[in-house]
Length: 476
Ligand code: NDP
Image (tube, rainbow, N blue to C red; front, side, top):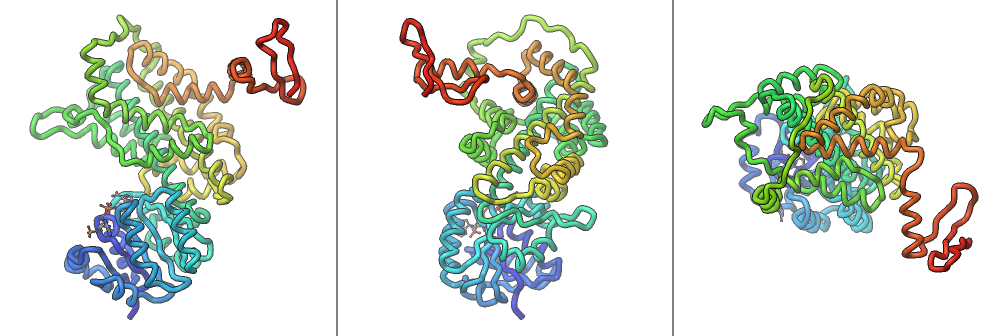
């Protein structure tokens, strides 16, 4: 008997993906650089399905039916290239290498182009949901050639999370599209987490609530429109009490957020595409600020002063924070989706944004009720310029904005950082502004660099001769 699919790289993610395939009745070939992990998997979980363990790459390749489907689940970067170099010479035209790790989409583009020359299909597939997702049903975002999806899609759809029987897996687009979308998913995840953290901070510092009480507030919100995995686990974390000290768990954790890099990649890519993903950028910078222990210590030593006194919040703080959180979340998602659309245009990926919202509804970290509305918005209008103008989101933001402004004002007055809430509001106000001070910037640019400007009243480019006495305007 031959295997329908093989997995190489059997650390926590690869092992669980392999088990997931086997539990769905597929025969799974197994391989790992060091054989120990392969043996261990078969010993511990061999009873869950049919596995064909292989010690060498050659044995592994020989055990697969054609076209061969090889899932690579190793450390991203150099290790992925090493594995590709090892397997590519053993494969035949039409075979598929599926990189399910967190690769950078530009690496995926490079790898796909190189393997195409050998007639091999390279599929960069984003996989979200951590180890539990990999085992019980992740959200899967495969890119690569469309033809490969015919032979690969049904297997991936089998193991993906389901919503009302529909799999959270779709062909995202060619080459790096899948990894790009996975990257933006992670960027949005950063923004979501930052906004939730700001909500907690305000409820605690301005509202005077204890972590246990805030856990209750989040549990309540989880029943409403904010209902999502991240809100749910936030309540769990806030409820946790440290066994050793008896203190709230959140108080014994060092307040320096770490990152593995996909948020940073999202912002770097957004800068190149010229898309203002301020929500994601602020969340990456907020982590960087938290981790900058030396600078924070210098600030503490110097005693950077906070406000002398601040008035109480002029409203129902809890209700207002819920509104600010929801509105800011809408902005962060609108920006992330705009980035996906911009990349899709840039690379001719033809990504359907509604389908992305659809496959994020389960399995992944940002799964939420909210995504149904995003899907509906793009179903109604596939070319939607921004989610903010869709009826549902427009209503939500108009309903939230007074509360949102009060929350941002309160955080500023109390000296509590809310980069997520405030930058989202600034973005919103920037979008709706009839006139932006960008006109003045154009004037400055023309003054010092003769960069020219356009006029509101006639077409063409103009330059003012700033150095002359009469400062005449010329058409350029
Ligand atoms: P790791 O990222 O820790 O990678 C370990 C695996 O990579 C082992 O199988 C290891 O083999 C193999 N490996 C490392 N270097 C090489 C090399 N030079 N040649 C061949 N194999 C090598 O494993 P994870 O399971 O945590 O993650 C796998 C991938 O999934 C990563 O790209 C990660 O970013 C991504 N991912 C992880 C998630 C998570 O929650 N952990 C979620 C979503 C994606 P050996 O046993 O011989 O050392």
